[in-house]
Amino acid sequence: MTDTEPKRPGRPALLAATPSGKRVEQWLRTLALLAGVLGLLIGLFTLELVGRL
Image (cartoon, rainbow, N blue to C red):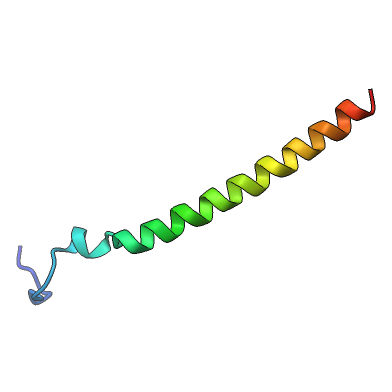
């Protein structure tokens, strides 16, 4: 078996596919914001249902 693709200098393939810490932080902030909005909507929906009792 021979490798037909030439070796590229730089990071190994697995590390090259790993996102940077800054990018991960952006995604976590986005997910936290979405979770907060979803929690607020669920809370308001629950209050509406309790208020109808």
